[in-house]
Image (spheres, rainbow, N blue to C red):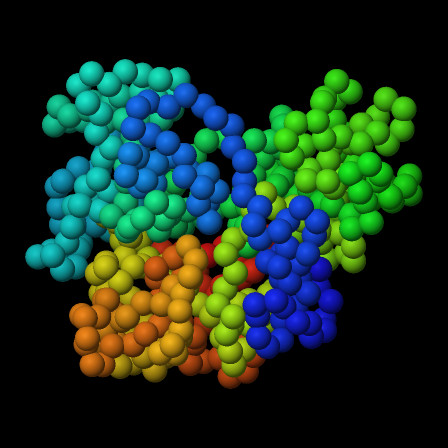
Length: 457
């Protein structure tokens, strides 16, 4: 993702964009076409489970109906831990009524909102139950719930599905993207290991599934290289370190090697030799792709944004923007209950969002944080972006044929917004609005580079 500060055209995009994101989403780098799908290592599974290829999270485990499987891993918060430890289900059908006090400065015991309609944990996260005769297979095991029922687990983490997922390949319940210590204990899609050699890993980012080393440092390709020849000479290799392969490795699938010198072999992925960048100072870096001719590597790209959107350069990185160039924001919310239920989806309570964006006044929210409306003829079509119908006064999904309903753009089924305090393209005055830099309850700019501090969604 290089920064060439000039206007470029982008297939499927109207308006002005930067070459950085053009490279990532349009897949200009060889081997990174939009149709590439991440390969995975097949592992034993119990009957009734299989693998689904998803657009946002790569391969995931799914039940017999194609519903994505999630875990709820333990996560350290400011005043303790939430989530589940191995072998100990903590998601039940009890409706919780008070806060847990896991997020300072808020104490425990405060009444939660809308108790008359508040769901239980299992209302939103149905456990994946195991039959009485279910047997362990590899890392798949069965754990006992306190009500005596049996639940499937993987590596001893209890397994769930999400009521937000409606069709095979949906991963609307959660993400494998990293999140900060101020965020709630999120649910995470579970999948098989990516089919990469030892020494490599794959990480979920905004624009796709990023290939890294097992130390989480990005790998890169050079545009001048071919599968049979590295054009990065001895001087070049002082900055761009070839990722070396064992001498006995043989080509397999998408992976091969090229001989740099007698007995020295370099890894090749999808026809391009791989390198690390000596100037990368942090994991998951995209800084090497700011250099002309060099690109990050993705096992698969995320679905592109709507073609009416643009990309804007700001003082702190690239953001996705609407057709006018105004920064797009996503809403993040998790309540401080022991079951860490989310509150960022239109099906969830809107009390937190209305309090944060307008002091409880829906009209003020519409003024300060307007939805990004979609035209009447707009058709959505991928696993990331859609058009949803919203009741502007409640924030919930609108009733069928509701006359005042708004057709708005949504990312992962959650509406996106602009900020009334942004005056011109490139403004990000609303970024981090809310509790704990918006990691708990608030709005974040839609940053297109995960390596920027605070840039995760």
